Amino acid sequence: MITRIREVRRAKKMTLQDVADRCDPPTTPQTIGRLETGTRTVSVGWLNRIAKALGVEAADLVKLPDQEDIPIAAMLGADGADAPRREGVVLPPRPEPGMVAVCVTSAVGDYRSGDEIWLRRLSPDAFGQAMNRDCLFPRSAGRFVFGRMIGKEDGKLHVLPLGAGQRQMVISNAPWIAVTVKLVRPL
Image 1 (cartoon, rainbow, N blue to C red):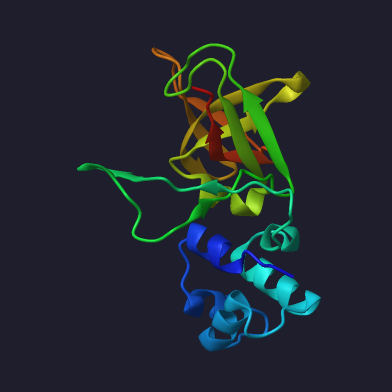
Image 2 (tube, rainbow, N blue to C red; image 1 turned 135 degrees about the vertical axis):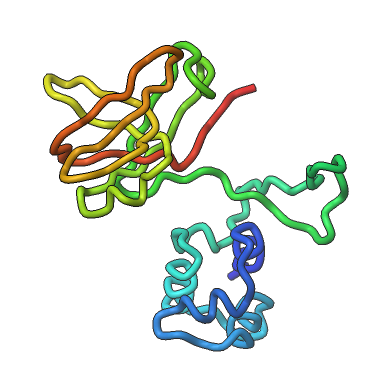
């Protein structure tokens, strides 16, 4: 079996030590390196452990004959585009459990018409993770508010809508909110 463990690990910007530490139970970086290079056989158990440590599906770690990779051609920074120091690939976007999406129909804030905003739903005990981030807030009668969460106190969420000239809103007792995690933008 040909694996893509190294490519996925590098795409996630993780070291061998990072992956080894996140395995359950933890292992050594040498073991992860041997599994990457094929000097040690990768079992289904190892594939599942490494996938969980990398935050991907086990299927993402297996190279299939008809699967196309997207190679990294250049690295873009403040000084311009440069060749990558080593070969790499990018991982296509993949939804996580509990995600929802917002489709943008006209420009608002930093978003353009045609954008897809992917969001991860949060329960009330995790609302603190959404501070100063764009979020979707459910309202009554199937309505929503989309804006930046700027405060949280006593079950009330303070939201700054993205449109110009709109006033801050307060949302009480939201059963869930969804925080932005990925922007998919056609060019």
